[in-house]
Picture 1 (spheres, rainbow, N blue to C red):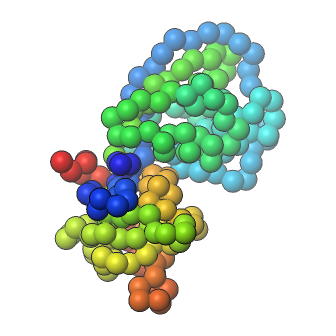
Picture 2 (cartoon, rainbow, N blue to C red):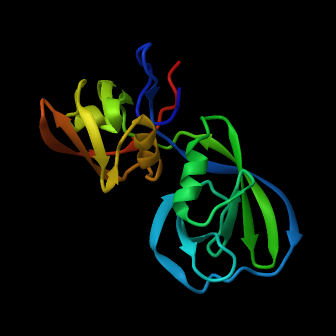
Length: 219
């Protein structure tokens, strides 16, 4: 089961999903190399690891840190370039999010950083951050994330989502499965207002939901 920040539980026939993002906790050894060029940046950016990230278009391929949230736990700094995740090269934010999104809460993954003339590795521990508050399972045929339950008082419940709804998008991110909903929620932080697109009784609907801090995985 994938643990993240939507909810908990599920039936025996398919996995259920809940939704979270990640925060940095540990810094490892460093060594000196030449600086990676970051003068030209992709106009596309992604929020992840408590920072705003974009692909570099000059020098060594990687993901450059454009901004860092003031309340973020990350040790990333503006101008850092992430060139690998778990030892595999990353050339854009989507590849980095995919790598971090595969890690369950409490498990580590590593990212390789270029900072000025230094390179070093940061160990990340996946931890819950933004919380939508639904338990979901994969819908057949990649049609979306089917809602199994909606805890009372959760952001999803406040937004009017119900058991049986089929979530198909979160803002502009298409949702094709429980895992893709996890990834979409994981790009946000508590306090973000998101639009959840879903189908109920064959009718497409939308709900405006404000994400809250994840209370952590339920037992």
